[in-house]
Structure formats: C-alpha cells, structure tokens
Length: 151
Image 1 (tube, one colour):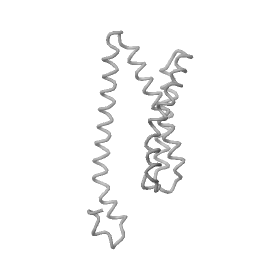
Image 2 (cartoon, one colour):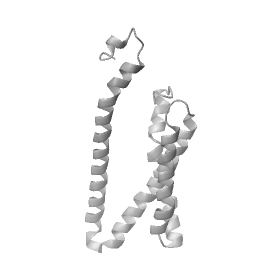
Image 3 (spheres, helix red, strand yellow):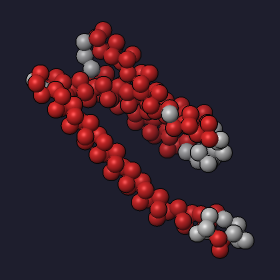
Image 4 (cartoon, helix red, strand yellow):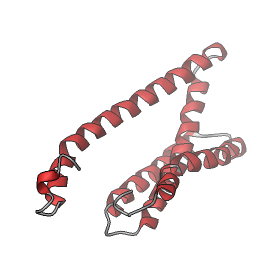
C-alpha cells in the first residue's frame, strides 16, 4: 500500500476486499446453485476463469504507474471467484462423502486450504526477505544508503 501512498484507513479497506467480496458473493452463488441445481460447471467455467483473469490483470496493473482503481477491480474479481470456489469445493466434498463423513471431509478441506496458505506466506516471506534489502539499497538516495539497515 506504500506504492499508492494510502493512509491506514484506506489500507484497511484494501486488505478487506477479499473477505467482504467473497462473503457478499457466496450467498448469491448459493442461490444460483439452488436455482440451476449444479455447481461444478459454474466453478469450472466461470469462477476459475474469473480468478485467472483477476490474477493476470493484477500482474499487469501492479506498480505505481497504474491507477489503484484497477487493482481494486482485480481484487474484486478474485474475491468473487474465491467465494464461488469455496462454496464449490465444499459442495463437492459434501457430494462425495456419506452423511457421517461430511464434517471430517470439510475439516480436511479447511486443513489443507490453510496449509496451502501457510506455505504461500512462507514462500512470500522468503522472497521478500531476500529481495527487499537489495531493492531498498538501490532506491535510497546516496546520503541514506549507509543507513539502509536502520530503515
């Protein structure tokens, strides 16, 4: 959020887009499932391409040379697709298990989803720890280059 010089309030709004967007869109997708009586093709042919589009556009619009509105648009695409994917994966698990095994299957889906998130955060932290100091040294002015570790 430092790239766009956002204050703390706006940064909070930006970080909450996925949570609010996916929670907003999930009941709408649930009503869609109830109406059409299927979820697999909606997830496969709408949610997955929307997630891919949002991530691809996010790569295109990253950096300070593009407007923040485009980044918000990408996050909304990802949030709506994520809400659909969560409902779709839980429905698939419930369809594949018997009545007694649903709670165990949902907990396993949650476990492995969180495990994947932890691995992603670990990779992100490792990349950031290895690239940020060099990038900071390159971006600092000559008078502040010797203070990069303090900053």
